[in-house]
Image (tube, rainbow, N blue to C red; front, top):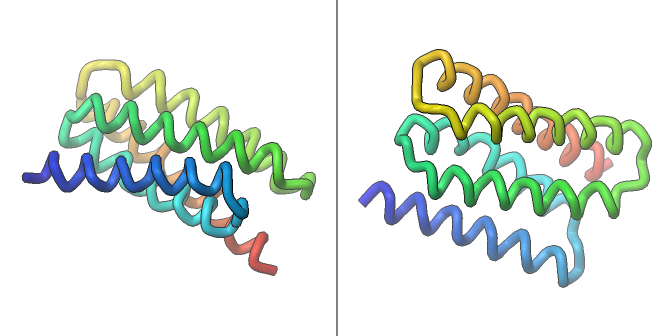
Length: 126
């Protein structure tokens, strides 16, 4: 049951990201979605659901690409560069076998991604 709910969340995340890419491009909503997906990555990794984790990382990458092309603020662009580095490292760790050390690293990286996305949301709302 958990996997079905999780799969539905991932699917909704991907659909939302795709809709924002082609539609009005509401950057605040997109960054909020990035924040939520980033928070959920740690939970998915602990469930050892590699397929959903890969899909979530792919969705975050897609959202970051959209944000990087549409955000003109130099501070936010630098933050997005940092978040991209975190995402690449997360992707590397997520491909490794589950261990408590890897779970801790995934947790730290997902927290960094979530906090960065939260800052972007707050900055875009100003």
